[in-house]
Image 1 (cartoon, rainbow, N blue to C red):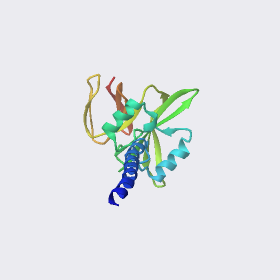
Image 2 (cartoon, rainbow, N blue to C red):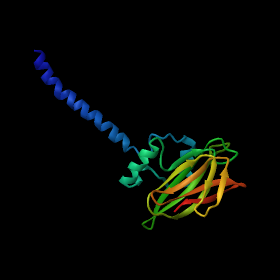
Image 3 (cartoon, one colour):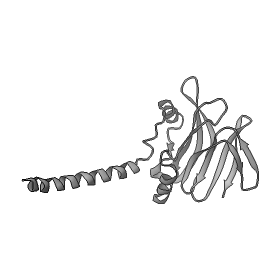
Image 4 (cartoon, rainbow, N blue to C red):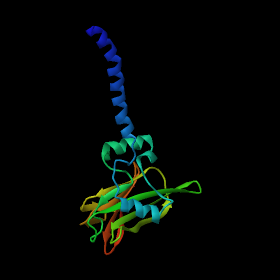
Length: 184
């Protein structure tokens, strides 16, 4: 009797274990849904730039999705969070994309808290895009550009990276964003 019940239990346990092994794979494909964007931020984006979408994991090549998961598994590749300007405690840098005439375009915007919702500031104008691009938050510190120039930043910076190609640091100084090419 025990053997008979065990015989029936083994396929059920096997099915259950297979089901459990699929769940992490499905969650691994979850693009940016695990990253909670405040409703006012999402609202500001949907009203200010409705034809643009936030870069998410699904827009990266499979190779770069794996690379991103290894480096930054807890964050969305199109959103960087930090104190990017002196007046804002917490802001969101957002990498937006859209197709125009069959060509991909990107722009980076910064959303900072305002009296009502969030204000949006354009960090980079829309431009043609190549490869897989992501955003990360740069910590305060000293950065050296490819030209040898160094900058010390006291606030967070925004790093726009074309994966396996190059990166640019955007940092706040004298009431506007400046850029430094970190790698080519």
